[in-house]
Length: 180
Image (cartoon, helix red, strand yellow):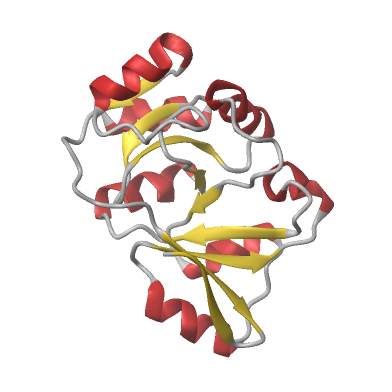
């Protein structure tokens, strides 16, 4: 199934799969059309940026994020894992991702199979699989109820017992918790 998913994502497709935390609706982060499609399918608030899943710390550089040694060290304490870190990104070309906030949230998932997919597709946006205002899908059946045939694939991963990621921001070397 992974090779089929990789092809779909590389062509700008959108799907639902289990991340290391919750079921997420995923698409290639560097495909503006696919990202906008997620906003439309979810009915997501246009001003809310999406979390970007990456396969290694250096991937943030593709988004114009420059890390000093101190920041790299801090990120090494969080990743891989269920902590999304907000970093500055003011590049106009990524406005479709940062939605005017001039920041992006990144996470390296603690799930080898997902990292393997990301290495082949490039970074993925991965908001929770639910329409805006409704609880995240607990399984593929719920996700299908939410989205039907509006997405290109569903990959079941069972019923996760985890919570959404913690979101933190690093401001002048200090970690600030945004969502626990």
